[in-house]
Image (tube, rainbow, N blue to C red):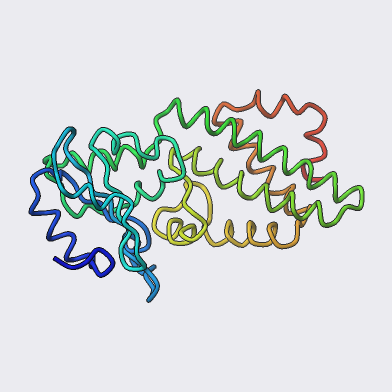
Length: 245
């Protein structure tokens, strides 16, 4: 067997597939996103073990080289991985390499890719408030002559905006690296992908206040339609500073 540092992805998959303790292998990261691999891309692989299974594969826990990054976890741990958490998007778009649960591994991944109704509503409310906060600070700082602060707050607002838009569609937000990839294949309902990317690019780079206000008008309409009027109304008269003039 190859030494751990020289272990290749294909050699490990062959090894793991021969072990009955392994119930699933899941490939995530750039290798799971068609067209996103480069010469620097490694293989990020989840190795899912049956609960209480005895296997020598646990020695690979934490294995990481420039070619292969392994996460060895139990089925119970896998069910809750990224729920919630930063890892959720990676798992939402991961590819199943091995599924010994008659589609059970695929169903777990599908559940991670879709926020339930209650979770989506709560998350949307939180991200909406965070977006409004950064937007308000950006516009106020611009008004008061704090140009750098205004641009930084505008850039912050874009992060919260994207979280909000994906939560409204009951999806985890993609990492920045995969934002264009995601929107090209799975557009947000009601949004023109090209125009949305142009807007967030300009706001992040310049803090353009009129553009921020026009965007907020669309967000306010969508948020109220989704039942988040109370979040917006809590801002009271401060909404006037965020809305188009």
